[in-house]
Length: 341
Image (cartoon, rainbow, N blue to C red):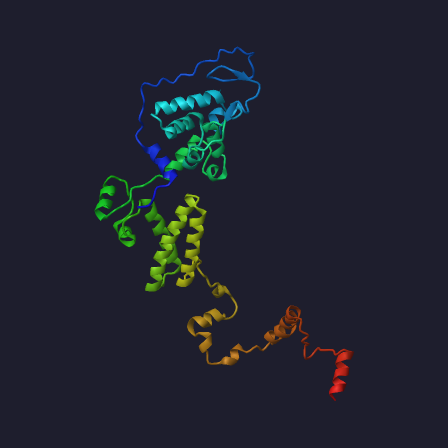
């Protein structure tokens, strides 16, 4: 059984049934410090500041767009609120953080939760988490609580189909759309989304390789499995896994002798004469009896050899090969010729 990663533990903590400590009373005392009313006031403690940055946390939620993209409670109240929520959720930091992400419109991601556990001295856990969700590996998935809903939906864990009987049970509940033929083709052990990825890639390869033999059919199924691994690695931002699967795919594809682009011969669209493609369709050129039909009467091949290939050869190899017809000897060539006589 595969070992669970630390990110899996975060997801388990979030999916676990909440344990609520009903004795906890969430309460943040209003500030007794009466300052002059400044421009930006905390809606929780009542203190105010001249600037929002460094005193309030940013959010991409549209609910705060007219507040310059800052939440309305100060950082001090934010941290105090977080620790009280941990007590409410019976010690679960994950559920406390997830709850705050919904309230303030922040994106919730397992990797950011785990990496934010290690905070530098004097820095709050929430402040560290907000810094982590702005990193590329997290921000590429979303920025707000609405993005969290979409991300979780697209990456939801579907039930793995164990057998034909299990498939029938899921179909009766409207939880599966695959057919028994697809299950028999790929075997059990995959969720619906994986079967769809496998089957779609199989159809694509078969479309461009309709006449593949039995050996190629085996390669095609292997390619479908590798494509599934690539897709999953890409979703999980697993660069190493993606590169490895991509390399194996390329090797297998080459070994199978397959193609993914439909080759079309447009030569039959020509309106003048009979093209070589037409001849080759009924009488392959290599077996055509009259070989003179394929002679180079215009001596185009000779021209290319003399006036294109020869100069390029001299340029690349430093040789001094001259054209036999248009060669003009210099004085050294004449002297050399006299010595030979």
